Image (cartoon, rainbow, N blue to C red; front, side, top):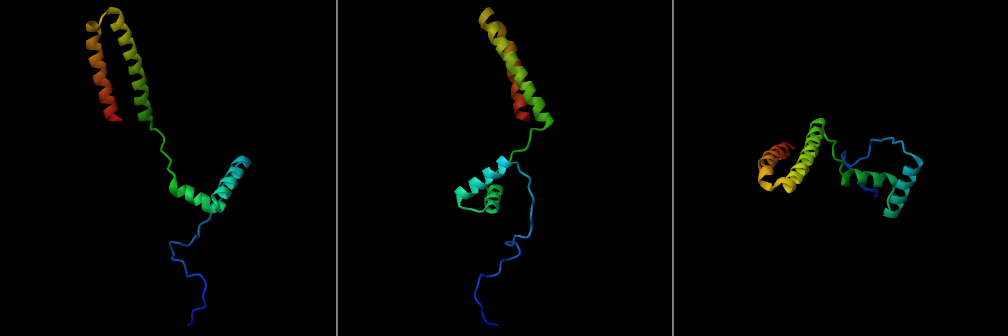
Length: 111
């Protein structure tokens, strides 16, 4: 068989055989179109690049949300201890501070 020229065949992993339909608002569509044009790519190639080059962080689990709320409460407690220390003297607030600091360390280690 003689070589007729043309583009070499793509391997199975290089072929683009899947199609994904995406619904967008008008604003999103024109943003995509504009960014792809500025990048000198087709909309499809731009979206493929976005998929490869970006990352999405997972949502916080309910357990992590609970721990963050606990940290916020502990921060409020620290502020109260600081006010007490300023008003009554530092020696009275020291034990409360040490106890709360230990709890915060434990919670941060869990996160």
